Length: 328
Image 1 (tube, rainbow, N blue to C red):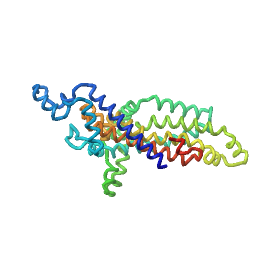
Image 2: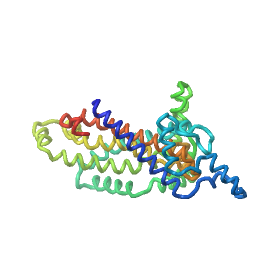
Image 3: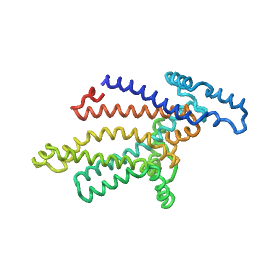
Image 4: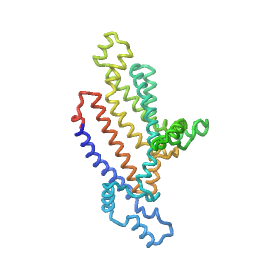
């Protein structure tokens, strides 16, 4: 286990440097960011002074290496827009995104597993066909379009749910204010319904199809036929023999799914004006706030690496045939 963790830490350094380099190049590809921080009437001398103050007068390799050196000391830089430490702003928005991702994750997994099992047990029937069609539709519909349609119908027409906003739960919980956190919980869920469903739609559809295919593969195995031949109840065969073994490939996808949800909420948060890290990064990219973008990208990459490591450990625990050395 120690070898795996050390290997993952080494990989994380490479991944973080890679994503920061890509985002750094992409942000500078659109031209000099200095012009976003000066007025239209600024003189050449004023522009030069602002460029020097922001550090954009140095060659790009020097700027990037300076950022990496500061990062090694734990300094993520100061946001050009907020004039505050970039990591503090990102961490302030991160709990809201965690709430949205967890809510969407619970919806997707809680529905995908039973729907996939039901489809597999009723293979070739109308039930299976209906679930398969719904899965294809869920994977075909973009999250932002789903969000817009939900705003128009459930928010503006029926007025069942709010079309924007957020009531914090995780932030007061982390601050130790349990009364406020759990007092906010009902309204937190109420505000999460529409953006959560919009984010969860694709994940729900994909995992339903994955569970179905895994169950179909396992249901044809000899040990499942043997269990049925012994006269075991059907629910025992399905849960303890079929689903338990079909669970292995699903665990890998489910574990990574949360990372995908964290990184895939940018457009949805923008559509619903949700104050999470996705909307924060979207605005930061438009404003060429490079330190803020880099801090957000690093945080998302670190979470994805952590989730991937946890998945490896859980996978090896569930399947004794898989060793950690082989998983590396």
